[in-house]
Image (cartoon, rainbow, N blue to C red; front, top):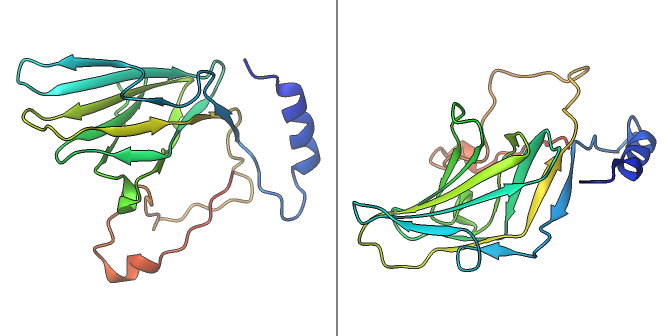
Length: 176
């Protein structure tokens, strides 16, 4: 469990200060160090010949949870899903080398303190899965809505494609 006394004291000093972002979470390295599909989790062979790797990551007490994946290389046809424990909430799915084909992923937050991580590899695919998870982002408070304006033209920068020429130079502002 995180010790929130120093975090709360720092937030109290930072909040409302010009140029200081509003922090909603803190990065927590994994206690066992980095984990990968080679060192942790469980691989299961499915009846149709496909394979599924599963792991659950938890940060007790988190309102939201983000997953930092500094290395992501999935073979053709394979997918990575990051989902909350709630079976009624769909997870986020990623392919290949992640958004923008960069080979890393700082996954969007999910609700709750537990993330279900799953890699699905189709039958017949022999190329290895190269996935490493380095840290969790423990979300402990929400984003205040006072003074913030939501626009109807939002674009999900995590899963958009660069098919539209005007999208290649998009700039976004993130509040943390």
